[in-house]
Length: 451
Image (tube, rainbow, N blue to C red; front, side):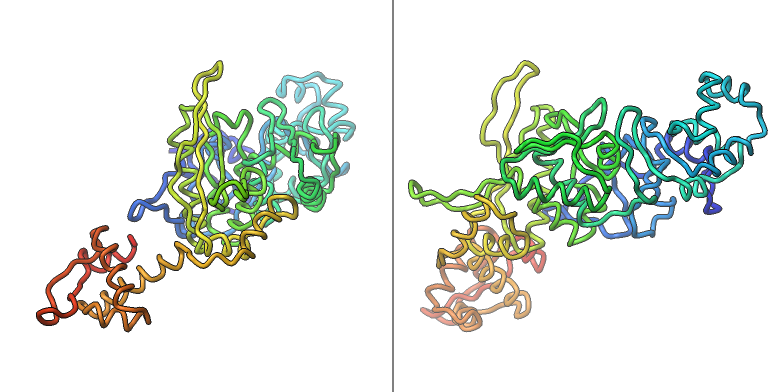
C-alpha cells in the first residue's frame, strides 16, 4: 500500500494521495451507551460524511494530535493562490523546465504560464501542487509564502495558514446548520436572519477571521465570496441543499466544551423557537430541523447528538420526534424536533448557552424569571439521589431513604414507586410487619445511568 510522507514536510505527491484516498478517518458513527450518544474521547478523530468527501484534514496523520487545522492543500481545486512575487519566480524556475514545456504539462496556454510566473494572476491549486513536485519545494514552504487566496471569480482573502479552529468558526458552522447557506456549485456563503443582532454577529465573526466584508448586503441577508464557503465546508459545514444533508456535528466541535456551546448557541439562535403564550400553559424551547425523508435516520442522529451535548450541560430535552411531514416534488419532507420544557433545564440553557439579544432571548428571559416551582429537573435529581443511596447501601428502608433525601416518607414512597414502575428498583421485604418497605436496585449500579 502506498505510504504518506512522515518526515514532517508535505510534497505534492502526498497532497494528491490524501485527496484521492480515504486514509484519513471513518465516517462518523454514533457511539451509544445506554441508548445515548457519547462524545468520543480526544484520541478519536471521527469525521462526518461531508468532511469525508474532502479527504484528509491535516491531522498530520498522527492520531494523538489534539489540534484540528486546515492547510491550503486541504482545500478544493476551485481555490487559487497568490504567492510572494520573488517566491513565485523561484517556484517556476526551480522546475528547470522551459515554460513552453510547462504549459504542455499543465495543459494550459503558454501566455498563461508566463503571466503566472510574473505573478500577474493567482495560481490554481492543482498547478501549485504540480509545481511543488517538479521544483522539489515543499508544500509547507509554499504555504509560508501565500499572500492571499481566492476562487476564480471571487474576492481575494488575506489569511494565514494553517487555519486553526476556534469559537468563531464553531459558531459559524452552527449558523450554516441553521439559517446559513453554502452554494453547491460556487461555494458562496450567505446568511439570512430577521434579527439584526445576528446579522451583525456573523459580519463581525467573518471580519475578524478572514478580514473581509460582505459583497452583498440587505437588511436581513449578507453574502460572502466562495472562498469563505470553501473554508467553512472543510470545517464541517453542510452544503446546499441542506434538505439532503448527511452532516452531523463535526468531531472537532464535539471534543471541546466551549466549541459545543458556541455551535449550539448559533444553531438555536437560527432554528430554535421559544414557546411562551398566554393562550396555553406550555413553556419551553424547541429546535426544528427539516430534511428529506431519505435523511430521516441522519436527522434523528443529529438531534440525538444535540440532546446529548445539552445533557452534558444539565439541560434535558425529549427524544427527537417528527412534528409533521409534507409532500414536495422530490418526495416527502419531514420536520423533526427536540423540546426543552423542564424549568431547571431552561435556566441552565439561559445561563450556560444563551441566545443573542432579540425576540427569542426576551421570551426565554421571561420564562426564566417566571419562577416556576415544579421542575422535572428537580424530580430527576431526587431519582438519582435515591439510586445513588441504594447503590451505596445495597438495601434501605423507605424511612432511611426519606431521611437521606430530607423529604417526607410519603414523598419518598411516591418516588420509589415511580422508579419501581420503571424497573429500576424493587421491594425485597419489610423492616417488620406493618413497617417500611425495604428497597434495592433492580439491575445493579448500571441502572443509575438510566434514571
